[in-house]
Image (cartoon, rainbow, N blue to C red; front, side, top):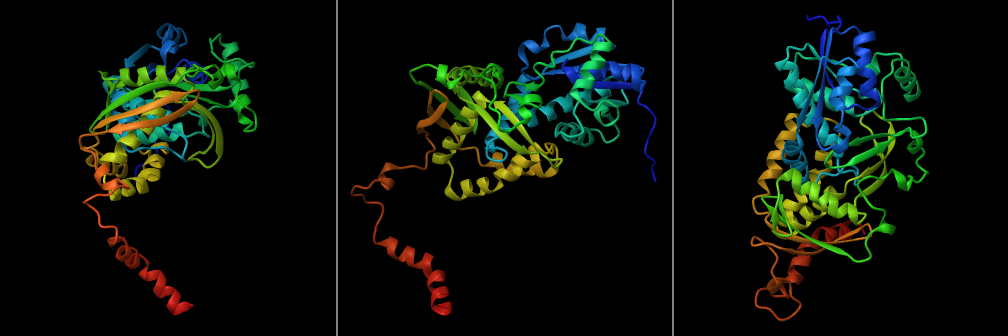
Length: 405
């Protein structure tokens, strides 16, 4: 039987963001954990200005090098769009912004560890959160022998306040203060806000907190209309102009955000067992989710829609819980993608002061026909057939009543 390796990892690749946790972790791995070398890896999945000065900061605080990779196109094309094709939404509200970013980050974390001969990877996820599971399940799925160092499960720090004290002691620049003690996670799909003042689920978020969306009260006084073209279930154009996946999502973020669309305040069920309150801005993703569902409404058969919907919650939970590379998610994705060949056409939406409505849809593969649906005289449907249809549907109900009273 193989014994668990309890020796300290010597060369570690750290998933680095420059935020509070990973800023401390980088120094801690060298000074307290005992690593000989730490490579900082930052995946650019759409953090925008948060990447400014990151390389210099990482090297100054102990990294032997800082690798920054632009993964925005891969993130949207290979992770966001597959989830959108599935209409994935967790507990009816959360569009999985952080959940979808973690596997692409972990994938490249593993690749860098292999190419640089590292014996471990590390992350800044806490022992209470979902991200630790997502990072580590992905690592296990892609490299069965690579170790993971999870400082939040090893060190003596027990709060954000103790981290800030450590940062002050070691002169580590951090973006969080005691006056604004909530954490954020941003990518091209969303930005999340958690912790600190937001831990009270009764407290309304401060308006100054929001970044991607205008408040509905300050949004334009006239509606904005947008048309999205789909090919094979994927959005490919906005108002007739084609974009790459990342550019398309970025454009929709601007349009929807300006109209106050995409804010969600929810209490979610974490995989580890407790509930947590999160506030999310997902402007472009909110538009895409609604548009795709409505594109399917006229291009997919009723029973295919019903089967997809019956699996929606299962798919979303797999992604939320970190099983992106699990065989069940991959198998389910194959089924979902097999339903998308006729999901082609255009959806028109209206955005106004935080509201979002579909106001038109069309497709050359449409299963909708006004000749069949009309209330006027038609030659395709004999209304008297409905009587027999209803009697057959109700037969079991009549039998039950006759036999049991």
